Amino acid sequence: QKIIFSAIQPSGKITLGNYLGAVKNWVELQDRYHCIYSLADLHAITVRQDPKALHDQSLLLLAQLIACGLDPQRCVLFIQSHVPAHAELAWVLNCYTMFGELSRMTQFKDKSQSHPENINAGLFTYPALMAADILLYQTDLVPVGEDQKQHVEICRDIATRFNGIYGDVFRMPEPFIPKVGARIMSLQEPTRKMSKSDTNQNGYILLMDEDKDILKKFKRAVTDSEMKVCYAEGKEGVNNLMRIYAAATGKTLDEITLEFDGRGYGDFKTAVGEAVVALLGPIREKTKEYLADRAYLEKVYRDGAERANEMAQKTLSDVYDKVGFVHR
Ligand code: TYM
Image (cartoon, rainbow, N blue to C red; front, side, top):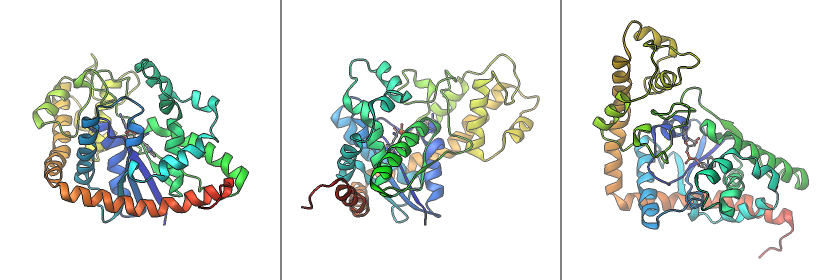
């Protein structure tokens, strides 16, 4: 059976982009494959976090992931810092990752621009830790949004380099990117990806947003002056709304064009808002229930860490052997 690994950072609340680009896929893959999903808290501290907020966001994220449909009986769900092999393998891989290739990572370039006061070494070597996450589990597929594709590619380069020296230690992973939803854009600046770190709150939809706020944000979404619902170049705002509507309802872009033929943007934006409310409302309510059951959440992440740890240790000890470390 194929092995699936992916992770999400508990830095702030999750957005509609995270859901449509990644988590929705994670849920669908659970029935078919051996799935392992992680809360990437080690990655989160590459940007300065408030400790209490990081702690609470991690529990909230876990509750949200379960509410989205991740079933701890059918997938391994754990917190990255609970499985020390991630940090351990990351160190080894750091020594097989080149300064030049890390310098070319667009996320590093973006983040060093948006956080010029904290361009730390962890931010720079972030992809080596992400490669460790993936390679520890002998992963076949990595379901991510478009923005993580470059990181999966560097992971493959690192694995190829390591395997080239030591033989077949790591299985070669492939990115698995959804057809619709892989790149959800800001509702206010549709040329930029939807991100929780956006300063304009109208640009993103959070999974925990109340219905009325979701509707309001879609009503304010930026479109264009054409008044025609169709998917075309130069219509980034409308294209984005169409993709969201398609991902939320399962309709195709052609069906959507037909549905709104001769109708204005007002109608269209209301329909997209309502579709998203229908999608997220139940998730939000379930999240509140799971979040209130702290004992259950603890059980989930402890079981998850135990199972992940067992798998991760196998790869780590193989790697330690291969590089020549003495057995303890
Ligand atoms: P993160 O936490 O930024 O995002 C989690 C997932 O959501 C996707 N995503 C989007 N998809 C579509 N449209 C958007 N606007 C959008 N914004 C975010 C991301 O592509 C991602 O799949 N480095 C990773 C976490 C990570 C990881 C890993 C992923 C750590 N280790 C190993 C895969 C494998 C990150 O920061 O994702």
